[in-house]
Amino acid sequence: MSDLTLVIGNKRYSSWSLRGWLTVKLSDQNFEEIVIPLRQPETRAEILKYSPAGKVPTLIQGEIVVWDSLAIAEHLAEAFPEAGLWPADAAARARARSVAAEMHSGFAALRSHMPMDVLAKLPGKGHDPEVLADADRIMAIWRDCRERFGQEGGFLFGAPGAADAFYAPVASRFVTYGINMDPVSQAYCDHVMEWPLMRAWVAAAEAEPWIIEFD
Image (cartoon, rainbow, N blue to C red; front, side, top):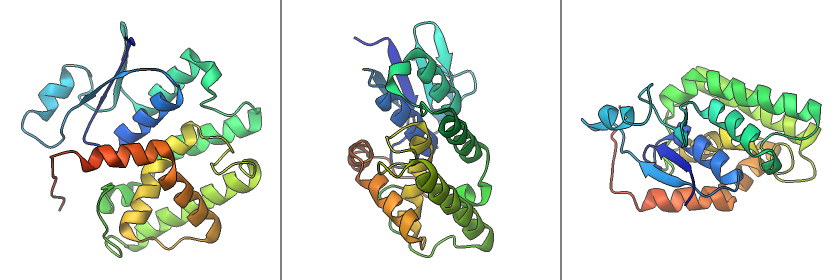
């Protein structure tokens, strides 16, 4: 039995949970998974049983509690360095951390107008100018990382890592909302969506009973 437990929200909708889940899976560790459905009357109380911030994802390792997706990635990188969550090369590692942090703190318009729904197809919805500006910046990041560091593999820095975990929910959003992509970004997006870990997440989302109606 593993001493790792990951508390997440619905797989259909919870982009931050997807980031945490992918980083734990990339760490190649067994873990217990607790799914708490979001936007229910009891949601916050249930999450507070595990997370002092009342948010998912939350990683529990013995007495250690980590309740932020980027902090989870850094904790796992320290705990399991052999997993290679960040690139070994210093320049690539700095870039990977920077683009993951930019995703973690930015792109508010895209988050607001294009909530993640890995099962929906809503082409054209949410294509406001500020959202498309966010999408353009994200695609610029993808092109830069692929051209500088990812030419020997299908991911941003070649092998799959924490940076890909942070952008996987965006790839899903681009598919859901029909974002037009340049060839490099389209190839990366396709690769992420065909990633076995991503396919497993989507398959689990399909089995969930919960439906959230977004405004």
